[in-house]
Every structure is written in C-alpha cells, then in structure tokens.
Length: 278
Image (cartoon, rainbow, N blue to C red; front, side, top):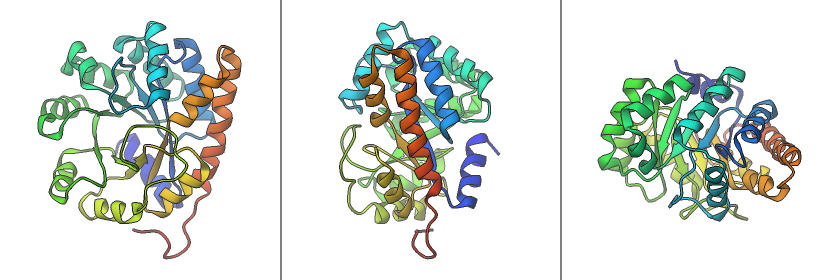
C-alpha cells in the first residue's frame, strides 16, 4: 500500500476529508517555499499538491500564473523543483507529495528521466494537466515503471466510457474538477456536485479529490457532503502569500494561518448518518 493509499484509507475510516493544499514550488523563492511547505505539514496537510512552474499554464488563473512567474524568476526549473521536494521529503517523510505539471516541461526534461528522478525525490503521484488521455500512455507507463502514481483528471463533462478508462489507467486518486474553467477562488461552487461525484464513484474506486475554486471552510464541508474524499485549495493560499510580499516571514505566517483554518475544517467534517454518498 502506497502513502497515498494509506492516507486516504485512514481519513475515510475517521470520516474526515483530506486537506490538500496546493503551492507552486519555489514561490517566491526556494528557501521561503521550503519553509511554507514545512508549515503546511505542521498545519495539518494530509497530502501536498505542488506545481512545477511553467510560463504558459492553460488551466491556471491569474493568481497561480503569477506564482509561476515569481518562481521562474527566482531560478526554479524542473531539476530545482525536484531538489526542493527531496529536501522536503527528508524533513517531512510522512506527508505524501503529488506534483501538478504540464507536458512541455516534462518533454524538455525527458519523460523517463523525470519520473525516475521524481520517485527518487519522494514524489508519490503526478498529474499532467494538459495531457489528453488518448496520448497519455507513455507518461503513464513511465510513471508506473518508476513507482509513481499517474493521477488523472475528470469533470462533470467526462462521459461514462471515459471514466471507465480513467479507472483502468489512473492511480493514487482522481482530480475532480469542481467547477468548469480555470483555477481561482469562487464564492459558490457548481451545483450538482453530489450527482457528479456519485457518477464518478460508480466507475472509479480511487479517492475523489475535488479542486478548482475551493477557498473556504464552507467549501470543504460542501464537497465532503457531496461525496469527495479530499479537497485541493490553491489560489486562496497563493493569494495570501502574494498579499504578504515582500516580507518573507509574513508570507510564511500568512499561508500557515489559513492552512490551519482549512485543515481544521476538513478534519472536523463528520457526515451525519445517511447524509453523505458512499
């Protein structure tokens, strides 16, 4: 059983939602990023989803795009990102790490080399956000060969036959898009999440982890009651970071404060009998 499997199994047994904070690796610089990630672990992160900065991220909104620009300007490249993850893994080996990236940086680095080096750094899973499922087998095979879970993505628009394929090819968890569009904080989540997640679970036995637009404790409660096993919060945390710049100490404290609030909400949501989909 992998660290991801064990984490989601333990949380499900306790009736809790997995809190999965997202940050861009190296934002605003290597040392501050490492401090932030350690504090996220201390604050109660169950899994870390970490983005490899890319100059043209089509799925990301302006907040995360700006974070990627800061990281790139600070000298972050794929190899440096993996060095950061390896250092974090040495310090916090108990917290699983999933990477979110785009295909271009992987192709430039080399698929086989990337997954091999990612596994050596302590990475548990990788989601390639812009890789079509029809073209994903080379990456999936490279991931499996290295012992890294190929994490796949689904939305309310994903048809049932494609969900069956996701179930056969994916590992770790399924990234469930809670709102069609790009990343960014939202006031309200999409309606019909319970029906969407129930449809996912009819075909897929992997944990369902919701992302895109989640930013408040109420959002975490809503996706839990809709049937999600985990919740990814990114833009809200990155915005806190951005607002505290250029004071690096204030940056770390601001992100850690919000993360602790969100982790507490995730771990407090115990479903009333019969209220939560199986």
